[in-house]
Length: 146
Image: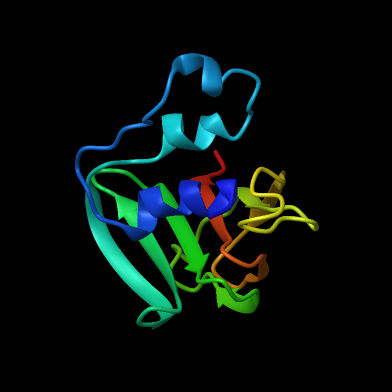
């Protein structure tokens, strides 16, 4: 899998006990580690946005007792493009989306560590275009703008 898919698994696979299995030195210098620090482990609600068993899934989860949302999207060995509507967000709020996505040259076998991090403001009317690399994924944190 790609690094972005590994981050997305924190959302797509439910587990109230999360871990990063490796030496801390393996994470030094990787800004993507911030997603692991931020992601919740207990959920108020979960929404499956798309999916096909064995092929792909996109899940959005709201952190328990919080207005924060997290989204994870993963695919099998096939690259995929998704248009994801954020209509599950509160209609009266604007959110900061921090998007951890596969890089343009990402591939589960050839270049699994290629990723990008982008921040943008979104709301319930936003549709995000996700480009998942072969074996790739996308992880997004959505926090209300104060």
